[in-house]
Image (cartoon, rainbow, N blue to C red; front, side, top):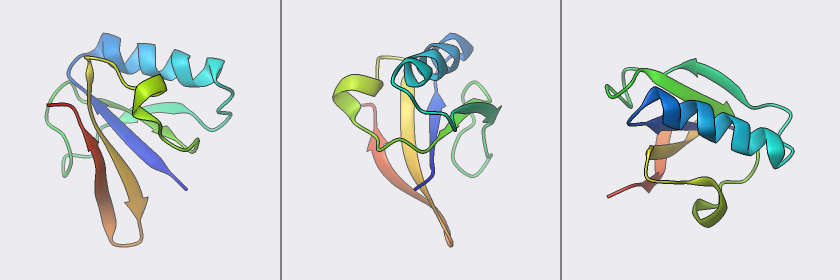
Length: 79
């Protein structure tokens, strides 16, 4: 599966990217955030490791989406 995470800050995106690298996700990469899902900082992270909010998300994580054939499905939102 492919996921895209969006962030409130660029620092949050870079931190998340490093966190996933440490967790062993070989597909993790920084990308431009699709406008359909975020207008916050403009930087997103694409990854394939199953999302676990308790070990991956922090206060800078805005949302996480599952990428589907039809677009994006919201699976996590930081309130």
